[in-house]
Amino acid sequence: MPSGTKKAAAKAKKSSSANTPFALQIGFLTPDNKRRVEFGMLKAFTDDNKPLFVIVFIMSDLQPSGEFQERVKVEVKVGDFLNAKAKTMIDQGLSLTQHQFLRGPITTRAKQVPAGTKTDAKLSELNNKLVDMTEVPE
Image 1 (cartoon, rainbow, N blue to C red):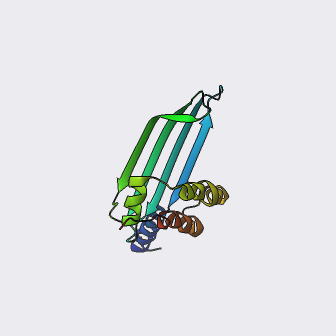
Image 2: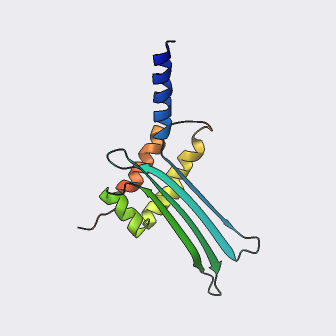
Image 3: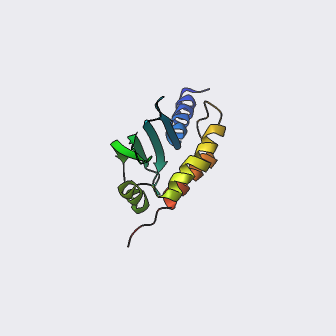
């Protein structure tokens, strides 16, 4: 294979893996069931194919009422958030429907994707649907 062809193939491979959306959500209770820890990460793309990342960490303590109260919440947002729906989603957080969609179809699909997979069209489509569910105030 000519040198230029090898470079073009390597660049194309790198480009396709760089545009892979994903979602990850992890949650657990401490052994005494009195503290809940949640971590989530989302990589999606705006309408003009610019990446955006959201990382969330939440630690909650069990209250006497049986409800968990957030003690620590950290949100990190990286990327071009000029897309109105993505910006609204970040500013207002996920709706209950979006949260269920993230924990349901997106998580299910992410578990089905074989390890080492560089791109998954269905997962990308689901991540974009998550952003599209956002109602933008007028």
